[in-house]
Image (cartoon, rainbow, N blue to C red):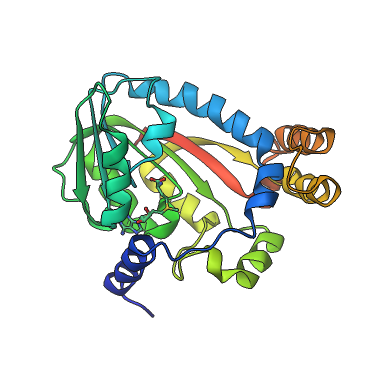
Length: 253
Ligand SMILES: C[S@@+](CC[C@H](N)C(=O)[O-])C[C@H]1O[C@@H](n2cnc3c(N)ncnc32)[C@H](O)[C@@H]1O
């Protein structure tokens, strides 16, 4: 088994050298996620309003730019990443913001901030690149009492997605692991949380829509039906493993 140090080196290399190739999946995403991106934007707008005047930490380095820039002002934004190239992207976005920012090259599995330094810890598509147990223990430690978490992560419980991932390794770093039910058990140990599951029917309908319309006309009745079915079925607990992504939000225990 690879050590965490070896995994970190691979992650660094993949992100510094831009090694991933997601060109094949992009047209399907434009169909399948057309309406869920709209829903995601609304959800994140509500959830990130909690960042106002707070000390916030992003694991990653620049989803903050799309999640909060121009919408809510934290007291201070701190962001970390293991890749200098990724960190630079965050720094570039921070040039004209009205709140203080700080960027650190740091391993999220081993945060070096003092205990109870932040009101909020958040990230987009990051936990699944990490050792979830190690990272969440640190997140719990660096959060102040009743601190808030917000993560948007891919899931790997649906066999269709598992097969797709196996067949398309070029889209992922070798050691990443989209979340499974055992990761939710770890979350439960440290946080009380809730979630919004997204993207099952939207992917099926998005696939048909892509076949019919090609890489255009994403705002169509098929994608709309897929998204409506997701809204209904995501309320049923035992169907959660079908979905591709999840928004998790909650508080430090
Ligand atoms: C799918 S990308 C998400 C990008 C990021 N959320 C953003 O948009 O700013 C995964 C990110 O995890 C970072 N990463 C991987 N392992 C890490 C680690 N051990 N500590 C910190 N960042 C890590 C990668 O460099 C990459 O930026």
